[in-house]
Length: 439
Image 1 (spheres, helix red, strand yellow):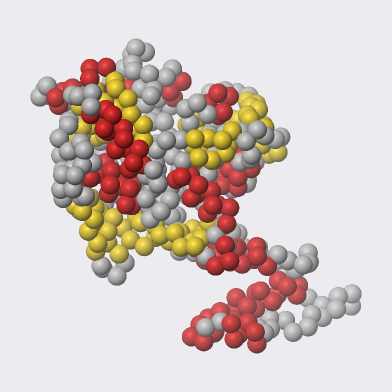
Image 2 (cartoon, rainbow, N blue to C red):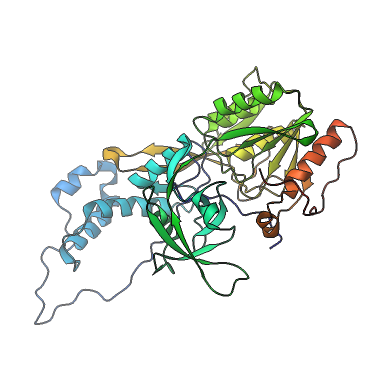
């Protein structure tokens, strides 16, 4: 499969990889109407009493200006409580289902309902620690699909690979079950075992894995030195600790007098808006980071915070299909200002802004799209248009298996060409097995 290691949309150990005002994670469900015959009476069935009645309490609890609009809702609520065969029904689930259906009716994949556990997990992710098997996953596919195992995680140690589809959990068939629900079934406390049946491309028979869950600790920004005096920093998410971890890594690396810096945003699904602004500000001395345009025509402008640590060092940014939202804010701004060349493949393309609004009684939150964002040059990347790299380089499944990283190799070559003021090709072939190992 001659394609970049697939997009990050989810993670086994959390409900949503992204959080805050930017989010690229998806919780996609489908409510299918069931159509049957109308209620009937015969000699063996007693007639139902007061069908479709809206009680005075329901009427009074509904705001006056929408009482007529909500009358069918309360009628449906009453029908369920009076006629549904399995009583009593769970009112909390009914309420959550109603909210979920309301959010889905918007037709926006980024506006969703997060139940209490999903909301808790999503916030835990940006704090940098959680329990699970440690793999990025795609929850928008028919079967829950592995994007990539987290380095050093139980998933990686067990041998899970990019593209693996989870078809059974603990022997139970996952066919037809929403991928987000499947993801939750993989969750569990550290020390417990989950048995996964995997369908893998080019492997005729399903594969079986028994994986012991662990507590996963992930730093959102890590750095190291590469050969040729090149510094390397990987940002995995735009969370609570990203700015402090990034500045610490920059101070450490810049003290070693690197010739240039590679910023790796691959498989980074995004995070907080303010963190994206802070990250860009480390590399750009002044200017606009992004424009935010709301539905009523209002526009907000987010400017660079002065005092960045790395505003002059030659810079290259790595992106792939998993670079979304806040990652694209960062990469787009750096590309627009000519501050950095982008290397890799076209990014995911999420140019909308979500606000997470907690609901009463700890009943989760709604995530609603409130605006669209644009790069400093007023580029929109929404609807999966994405950012186009200056140097196009793919990464294959074979590369991943062999722990080769042709994209990082191309980034280093591009950086050295920039430093030496030589020509930079717009694409590079996949390199030989002597390529730089994955960081």
